[in-house]
Image (cartoon, rainbow over all chains, first blue to last red; front, side, top):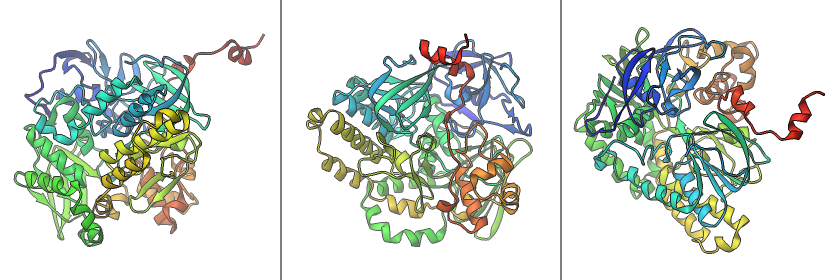
Amino acid sequence: MFKRSDQDNRPPVQIFVDGAAVAAREGDTVSAALLASGRDVRRATAVSGAPRLPYCMMGVCFDCLVTIDGVGNRQGCLVPVAEGMQIEIQKSKREINR
Amino acid sequence: MSAAPKRDSYDVVVIGAGPAGLAAAANAAEAGLSTLLLDENAGPGGQVWRAIASTPVRERDHLGADYWAGADLVDAVHASGAEIIQRATVWSLDRHLDIGISVGGASAFVKARRVILATGALERPFPIPGWTLPGVMTAGAAQTMLKSSALVPDGRTVIAGQGPLLWLLAAQILRLGGRVDRILDTTERRNYLAALPHAFAFLTSPFFAKGLALMREVRAKVPVVSGLSELAAAGDGQLASVSYVAGGRRETILSDLLLLHQGVVPNVNLAMAAGIEHRWDDRQLCWSPVLDQNGNSSVEGIAIAGDGAGIGGAAAAVLRGRIAARAAADALAPAAAARFAPMSTIRASLAQAERGRAFLDTLFRPAPQFRIPSGDTIVCRCEEVTSQDILDAVAIGATGPNQLKAYRRAGMGPCQGRLCGLTVTELMGQARGKSPQEIGYYRIRAPVKPITLAELASIPKTEADIKAVVRG
């Protein structure tokens, strides 16, 4: 859906998406890194389980909700990636304590 | 940069580091006022100058001169002595000018003598069938990824809607080597006639030449279909096709990515939560705060600058930020304020920057069928409430957006009405034969962004606070 421009020479940052290593770039938000990864990163909504991807990328729509380092319902479009970050794609409702 | 505020009170707290917030914070600090600038993003710039300090796009022409125009203001705010906190979530503001902030997982309150809200705009909801499918995004979303990560569309890409941003985005995608297969223009033909009385001001504004050049650049490379009367996205769990009707002919094209845009509207949640009076703006079809000529709102001590005060664009936002800062300095540090440009000069520049806006608003007034959906089209994305669900609720007695919450939970999801509120107001107004002003809006309350209990629990407490709730 998206590709990286040749102009981009930022250093790589390794994150993990549901346990699999993904190469992001320094300064990517979690959502941008997920969309650039080419993986199926669709979450499932809490209400009906319908698949969704980020919609606004600017912090207003909450369709980018994702679990980051064990904390659920984070807005992936507002959080920059960090080396070793553990991302989990949320499938339906959030669990207690996460 | 993501540290907690250094003090517990400031002369001026500016919320939002886009064009208006940067200008306001720089000017307030230059006047010697203790100034705190709070922003949600990783770096300053807001949406229009997003990632200006970090963009991986190295070819400056690819983003355009209007983008780089923000660099001086970012330098100015850094030189001004204002305290800047990025990645700060402002989740509460009240009439006592107490501001609830979360930074790095911990919350705190700061107090201000004056607050300048510069929360900017968000894209108007575009509730067509299939707009919740993966593969459908806003044009602004694609532009954000382009600016901050140099990411461009790769698959079969359709851009649909209307307004200046749509053409700018298409041009930027093409310059960076991305793909745009088709542009679907939803501008209503009758709007051209309606906008005619405002044409002179527009033709003599900078918008005109820029817009014309962008449209020429894009049209040379991408087929454009105008006069859309219907638009829908379809697919099974993922966008597969876009269908539309133009000139009475229906067409369906295969697509991997659909980017939607029909203008921007003020981001009102924090202002509304503070109790600031808003009115329905019939020209811009949105809620706008009631302000005096200095940007002062109905709540004493809170001013609003930038697109959050009504859509005016980046150049106007900078000037509104300067006006709000100047007004704060006049009140809090009159001797220092006297050294700055007089208010009348800034106001004259603002009038100049706002030239052509009436034309754009009239020409790009979104058509009713793209604002007010019908049938099983989703209105509230969070709670998955359809247009028909809302009409059914009206039929059994729901009178306005707040009653609707009890019937269908519309507006009660994490986005707190940002993506459905305008649609709900207009839809219920139409169903009940009332104006949007009469129908009203959701009652917005703090926290305006979700925060965890741990963040709340981390708020510093005095001995007296603890004694008030602990027994024995």
